[in-house]
Structure formats: C-alpha cells, structure tokens
Amino acid sequence: MLADGNYLSVCAYDCPDSCGMVATCSEGRLVKLEGRKDNPYTRGFICHKGRRWVRDLRGQDRLTSPLARRNDKFVLIGWDEALDMTAQAIRLAALRHGHQSFLFYEGSGNLLMGNKVQHLLPLMLGGSTMATGSLCGSEGKVGLARSYGTVGRDQPLAALESKSILLWGRNPAENSVHFLAILHDARQRGAHLGTIDVRATPTTTISDSAWVVRPGSDLTLALYLCHEALILHGEPQAAHEGYDAFRQACLLVSAEDAQLATGLSAAALHALVGFVVDQPPLSIWTGYGLQRTRWGADLVHVIDTLGFLLGNHGVPGGGVWFDQDDDNLLPDGFATVPGAQTRFVPRPSLGASLLEADPPVEAAMFVRGNPASQCPDAGKVLRFLEQCPFSVCLDWHMSVTARACTLVLPTTVFLERGDDYVMSYFHDLLQKTNKAAEPPEGVRDELNIVRDVALRLGLPDRFITERARLADVENDPRLTPAGPGMWRLKEAPRIQGTFHFPSRVPEVAALPSMLRLITVHVRDYINGIDPNQARARTLPPVASVSTELAHERCLIEGQKVTLRNAQGSLDVRIHLDKSIAAQTVVLPQGVEGVNLLVAPGLTPDGNSCINDSWILLEPAQQ
Ligand SMILES: Nc1nc2c(c(=O)[nH]1)N[C@H]1C(S)=C(S)[C@@H](COP(=O)(O)OP(=O)(O)OC[C@H]3O[C@@H](n4cnc5c(=O)[nH]c(N)nc54)[C@H](O)[C@@H]3O)O[C@H]1N2
Ligand SMILES: Nc1nc2c(c(=O)[nH]1)N[C@H]1C(S)=C(S)[C@@H](COP(=O)(O)OP(=O)(O)OC[C@H]3O[C@@H](n4cnc5c(=O)[nH]c(N)nc54)[C@H](O)[C@@H]3O)O[C@H]1N2
Ligand code: SF4
Ligand SMILES: [Mo]
Image (cartoon, rainbow, N blue to C red; front, side):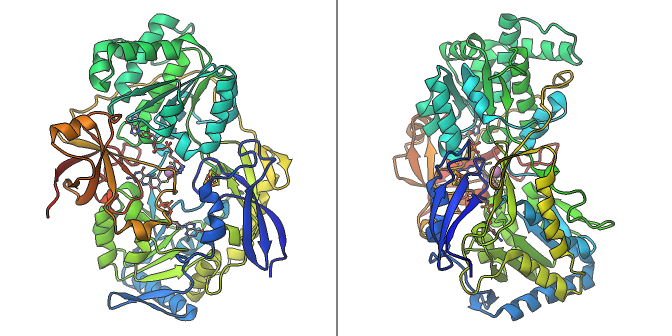
C-alpha cells in the first residue's frame, strides 16, 4: 500500500491551467489536495473542480465493478468474464470484417501523456478505426500556424507587460482561473482589459470594456479592424507575400459592414478601434468558442494579422495567442507500429461516419471519451451504439456514453497512477504525476485493462517496455528543471521569418432565418464530466435567450420550450438575459442532450463547426 505522506502531482483535467498539486495520502486514501506553491502560474491555488477529487475518488458515483448489459439492465460481472467478453468481441469483429471493424475511440478525459501507450492495442491488431479531427481548438491552431508556420507556445505571463489585453471569445473567469489572476495583476500594473463575446460572462463583467457581437460576425469585425489598423498605424514597411490582396479585401469592409454584422453601435465600434490601436503593446488572446466554426482558421489568421499590422508581433507584452499541442515531447516512435493501417473517421461527424462505415464497426472501445455527450449530432452516436453488437466504455463514473454501451469497465483516474506527465496547453510547464491514492477495490488500472485485452488476443506484450520509455521525456534538451517533477519547456519563438498574410478571405454565407445555438464551457465542471449529472438529468436544461427575443416571442422566465432542428430536439427552460446577442440561444455544453442539436459539419481541415448550429424555438409539447 502507498505510504502515508504528501505527493506532488498535477491536475490532469482537460483544463489549460494544469495546476501543480500536493496530495496527502493516509492509509491509501486521498485526504487532502492543495495547490503547489512553486508553480509560477497556478501559485498554490487549485479550483473547486480539482479539490473535489478528494470526495469523488470515493464518491457514490464511482464505478467499482464491471457492468454488463443484460436485457436493458446492467448487471455486475467479474473482471475475467468482462475481459474475455471484450477480447472475444474484438476477435469476432476482426474475423468477420477485418481489423478496422474494431473502433478505438479516445477523448480528452485527462491530459496524461502516457495515454498514448494504449494505441498499441489497435495498432498491433493491424490498425483499427480511430477518430481524427478536433472538437476543441485545432481549427484556431491551423489559422495561427499560417502566419509563421508554427503556433508557438503561449506565454501567459506576457500579459503582465501588455498595456492593452483583448480576450476574444475567451472566458478565463470560468475556464482558466489562473489566467484571470495574471490578468488581475496586469490590470494592477495599468493594463486595460477588453473582451469581445456574444454575451456577458464573469470575464466581461470584470473587464474595463466589453463588446457583445453576434456570433459569427467576428471575421467581418476583424477585417474591419485590420482596415482601421492600416489607416491609423500605417502600412507595413517590408514587402510581404499576399499583402496587396489582403489589403484590398480588408479595405472593402466598412464601419457600416462591421456594425451591421456585429450589431455594435457606431460609438461602440469606434471605442473598439481606439482600444486596439491607442495603447500598445496589445496582446490578443483568442478563445475556443469563436473558432468552432467553418472558417475558424481564417478568423484566427485574420486576428493574428491585426496583431501584426498594429506592430505587436515580437514585442514584449504584444502578440496573438491561442493554444498549442504537446505531441512533440514524446520519445521518437513512441507507441507506433510500422505498417498498421488505421482507418480514420472524423470526430465532429462521428455518429454518421460510424453508421456508414464499410467495413462496419462491430466492436467499439471508448477510453477517456464521452462522444455520446460531447460529439456533434450525438443522436447518431447513440444510434450507432444501439446497433453495434459490442461496445465497452472505460470510465470512472457512468457517463452518457457508458450508459449506452454493452459493457462498462471501472478504471483508475490520474491520482491513482504515477510516473506520467502533463504538458499544459496554455503555459510552458511540464509536470510529473505521482500516485497519491490506492484505487477502490474492484477498480483496475486503465493501461492494465487495455494490456489484458491485448494479451487475450495473443498480441505481443510491448506495453510495459513502451510505458517505461515515457520517462525519456525528461531528457528533452528543451527542458530546464523548475522544481521537483517540474520543467520549463523552451521552444523556438513563433515570430520568425516573414509574416504570411491570409491568402483568401472567405465569403461568410447568408445566415438561415433560424436562431443560432451557442454552447459554452461553464465554471462547475469540465466538458461532459458533471458530478451532478444524475441529478441534473431530471431537470430540463436552462437555455439563455435575449430579453428582446423573449419579448418578440412572448416568452417568460422559466417557461418550458422545445429547441428543434433537423438533427433532433431538446426541451429546455428559458432564462432571459439582456446581454445576449440578437437571435442567439446559449446553452452550457456537456449538458445531456445539447449535442443532439449540434451540427456535424466539418471545416476544410476536418475540425468541428460546433457553433455553426441553427435551431427553431417552439412552445413545449404538453
Ligand atoms: N470550468 C471549466 N473550465 C474549462 C472547461 C470546462 O468545461 N469548464 N473546458 C476546458 C476546455 S476543453 C476548453 S476547450 C476551454 C474552453 O475555454 P473558452 O474558450 O474560455 O470557452 P468557450 O466557452 O468554448 O468559449 C469562450 C467564449 O466564446 C464565446 N463565443 C462563442 N461563439 C462566439 C463567437 O462567434 N464570437 C465571439 N466573439 N465569441 C463567441 C462564448 O460565449 C464564450 O464565452 O476551457 C477549458 N476549461
Ligand atoms: N456542443 C458542444 N460540444 C462540445 C464542446 C462545446 O463547446 N460545445 N466542447 C468540445 C471540447 S472543447 C472538448 S475538449 C470535448 C471533450 O470531449 P470528451 O473528451 O469526449 O469529453 P470529456 O467530458 O472531457 O471526458 C470524457 C470522459 O473521460 C472520463 N475520464 C476522466 N478521466 C479518465 C481516466 O483517467 N480514464 C478513463 N478511462 N476515463 C476518464 C470522464 O469521466 C468523461 O466521461 O467536447 C467538445 N464538445
Ligand atoms: S480544473 Fe483546472 S483550474 Fe481546476 S485544479 Fe484542475 S487544472 Fe487547476
Ligand atoms: Mo476543449
């Protein structure tokens, strides 16, 4: 059993902050979690979601036995039977339709780098079906990389040197609270904080200036701001490829165009121009919400162009930031299998792709993912699960996806494993995890579950040796020790070589005469992991609409209505919010049923267009 004492770890939630933690273990149990004081970003503080693990590890929701579906009910079964069933189902699917008949789906339930070892199961089988494309931030990264070829690494502390800070579709007061603390310090040093969003949020409320725009109008707005930057700040000195065409395109966008698209008044637009121009250096922090659209990459590239035209690139406290990957830290060839032929299905249209897959998927494994809740057009994911002969979900609690599978296997969470690493997707620290608690009886280590299935299938045991190679990440020459189990990663600066202007500016299509559905991340839970879900399921979710829209439709606070579109329908209660942009309905993401309404479209780069979703609002059927 784990010795009593304090263990350093890191919160592995899919959260940009990646807090350093001190975990106290007593008699094998986690009894206390606190922030690690020497982490320069998270500075000794962890949020309530992190602290909640003390309760949740041994909470009522914790799964502690394999569960198999029998006649529409789950029954407890033993581990041997569960693992045999899994191996047998994969073997059968592969025999009938080849190895691509096995789906290995992983989500972002935790950010542990060692998760990748599990890929050995599908790869050693010959390559299975896996998901590609992002629901999250890849679209913006594609756009940012167009400027200099790389997205660089965010430097949250750079905000301390900014005189103006613009959060564009980003809500750190709920989704990245440690960045909020840095922003607070920057304001104390005299920086002005501005926000562009489609509604008031806890972040807009504490901003010095906030602009509410219609969803999807940001590209027109960004082009107009580039237009003003050219006039007020002057043309770039050096010649740049693509500049003339871009210059022409943005000069065509007038203040009237920007007002019409965004719904901003002339005075508000004028103030925004002043905000971005008047007080350099300006740092712009684009968020996830605004880039989950068909033209998200183009939008982020134009926003980066605004930063460039205003002379903020490469200046301390200036620049445009978004997000970055941790992939390139893994040892060379980590968990790869030469010759494996993987079939990729797009994550944003997962359900439809799996329903149409040929050869069909007849055995599916879900690890750290909840696609029946989190993927667009979730109704089709559920339809796929209904018809798939075998589906197994590895999770620590009963997620929406687990409930729809034929088998559920209870796994350890990050605090019950050790010797893994988390590289933040926001700041520059790599941190090591330590095991800080014994799992409850009946729960098995996630990698061991995957390995046991592989061994039952007669696959070679590369899992242990490959897992041991993970420690090589510590030897990366770009790392400098920053404390026990903590390193600073220094990468080449993003601003290098010549700036590439957007080569084309997309035409934004005419908008359907429906309401726009915007789904947002909220303070109390991460993505689909709501500890109160069981209780919340009995209540209709709350959809916020503008007071103006409510008056137009004679809707009152708390009224039950149905949201509907070609994908599905959802009963909700109305909340009137005078801050929300016109013709827009806002729902928290992760609430069960929301993604029944979300469109499965793909961007040209295969990422999600979650916020290009349109709905009708009707009186609820009694
Ligand atoms: N508490 C908590 N923290 C989290 C998460 C969580 O679920 N809960 N999830 C984590 C993950 S996985 C992610 S990706 C990040 C997300 O972090 P954020 O980017 O902060 O969150 P989002 O809610 O996706 O979008 C931010 C804002 O964009 C606005 N927005 C939406 N559409 C548009 C638009 O067209 N234009 C403009 N200007 N604004 C728009 C939304 O109203 C929202 O306030 O947060 C991470 N942190
Ligand atoms: N409508 C709408 N949909 C969205 C979004 C949106 O803004 N709007 N946001 C999108 C974004 S940004 C993201 S990142 C995705 C996230 O989508 P997903 O990654 O599918 O969802 P999560 O809820 O983060 O986590 C999946 C599951 O992992 C489980 N889990 C946690 N730790 C472990 C572990 O150690 N082992 C195992 N086996 N399971 C574990 C959790 O309990 C949870 O059930 O959702 C996307 N979906
Ligand atoms: S959820 Fe985010 S802010 Fe909260 S403890 Fe974890 S990493 Fe820190
Ligand atoms: Mo995300």
